[in-house]
Figure 1 (cartoon, helix red, strand yellow):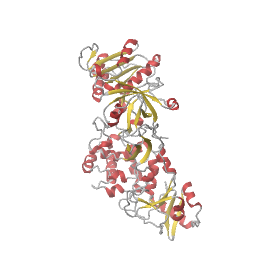
Figure 2 (cartoon, rainbow over the protein chains, first blue to last red):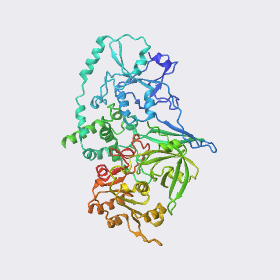
Figure 3 (tube, rainbow over the protein chains, first blue to last red):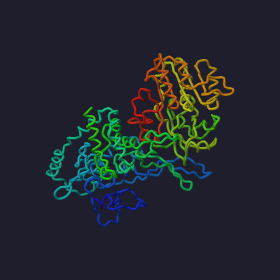
Length: 338
Length: 277
């Protein structure tokens, strides 16, 4: 199956080891299968892949436009549409949490032509999670380890192979020419039963944050201690599948320029610094609060769902052990007291 | 769809507005007639001025939609892009992306009402756009009061127009400078003091106030003392911006995006927000 896809599409799988950043098909944390690969297999870690799939929809950098600054060139300074790849890319090994993150990011990027073009040309092939990590909390955020939401093909392990669910037209196209055996009824009903058994009791508990007053959450005492601990390294924001902010800069090399956008982080003082020197979020406690409230209050106020899928990457990788689950517990407690 | 692609424009004229040379007004004309026709803005909106090799900056549109053949932007030299812009010449090419943001409610809440415009320093730009718009449809509004202050006579923007407005007779114009200056025969005093003396009636009125935060802070008490409410007063916020389209998140003030939900807010709305601006 993978072999067939690899003949016509660009196929990515989770990287086994750290790749060279200079690779032409660079997608951090993912490696491109090359056609000469002998073994078309890849290891899939328990829990989320090391890097999220946002790199395929919101790559960094992404060229927004190009121009020349050559003197006497008639088009000097004229901005042009960039050349963009139209190749279909197939991403293998996507976990349900990451698949859901694409749908969440799609809300602010609904009108963004770059994000939408990347969505058009990307197919996600996901694997449900038979095991989860202690840092996983997708069920708390309204997801499930067995979810197929946001995927084009969803694979679940059965006793003697995989059950493939076709979830979209793109997924349909991926399996159209393959000779696959129809799934036995027993496998389908077994998966449905597992899904039903899951449930997500704590989703409603978190929903109390949505109805709560901004002032109560904004003035919560925990920000002070959390802000003290946070070193504003920004790691959580870059590894987060649902952090989506960006910076835009111009780069000129030998008279040829481009305007690029790339991942930014609200953890950095420069993020909000005015030219005058005034900084509305000049203190790190303000920046720490901004990240959590954006996910748990600002985003849901605007779009509905929380901007978090519970992948737990930030819990795993925070150098000072800040845990968003504890932040949520604290805020829920605070609103309950109120 | 958002493309982040600016319209190509040429600099048609540059006016040095202030004695320190730090404020210049750039008159921009579209290179493409179709772009000129597509451009529709309301006073109070802003646009990204786009310089190849330098980047983009959000600047309030100083021209009125009624000035159809060009756009005006008055730019304070402050950072990288504005410094580069100040070095550009008539005839040079640049880009404009927009219009962005919401603008003042000239066609809704302001219709049929008395309008009080209070400006301090170079924040007068979008209020100039507003005044020109109101004057083009003068009969649709009640009394227009325009209070504008700068540090010195030489720091006032749009001086020729101020003189024309003074002679019209259908604007209650109060131009003031902070301290006595040789040759200045007009008002002397800070904007809040002058606003208190003018004491515009809140009856069937709206106020638009743009200026340094300290000016806005001290202008409110004298207005409140004579009955102005928070929902009659419109302010314009500024924050660092990148996309200007509500995507990149940079300009958020708590849950609010200045670029998309604003930059114009009522004072009542601003009071609901955390102080992140």
